Image (tube, rainbow, N blue to C red; front, side):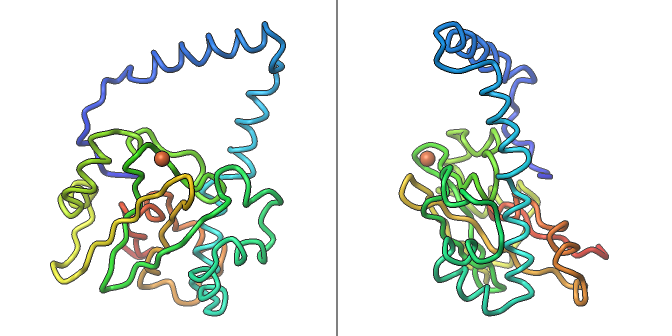
Amino acid sequence: MTKYDGFNYDRDREIYSAARVRALESLLIEKGIISGETVDKVLNYFETEMGPFNGAKIVAKAWTDPEFKAQLLEDCNAAVSNIGLPVGMSGAEGEHMKVVENTAEVHNIVICTLCSCYPWPTLGLPPYWFKDPTFRARAAREPRAVLTEFGVDLPESTTISLWDSSAQIRWFVLPQRPEGTEGMSEEELAALVTPEAMMGVALVPSPSA
Ligand code: FE
């Protein structure tokens, strides 16, 4: 849930893309390249198997298991293969995922300056604004201002680091564990973690806040 609303998109911004997608889909079906169920299968895959619930599970595990966290930061793909996530986790745009840790000293943001590279298996499909040229340019040029617009006000002493995802490496953020979560189970912790927090444009709120 992002507070960001600074791009002022038209309400019907998706209409033209949706029409193009429908036209392409019917053409592909007509030519026998895909079946009527293919698109539904792909959508279902990203709703039930590959999505931000995987990233949240990884973050919660890292918050509660220092050994796992160390491995995650060292070799993300090896670490996630050890905790029972779906087979194929390293496929679907997740072949080379890397994780950076937010601390009191360093806050990380992930963008793709070139297009919209994103770790689908752990964060799902990227939101609309992640692909927006204005967001991509401004996040690189004035990350602190963009963070403020997202509702993230960091002390001047916090260094902001930007990570540019690409076809070679797709980054995501290990957010800071919020105060007041001592004694919470991994499942309870995972429920606090949003995709935005794993992109570095939000903090994970304390459950008591
Ligand atoms: Fe890209």
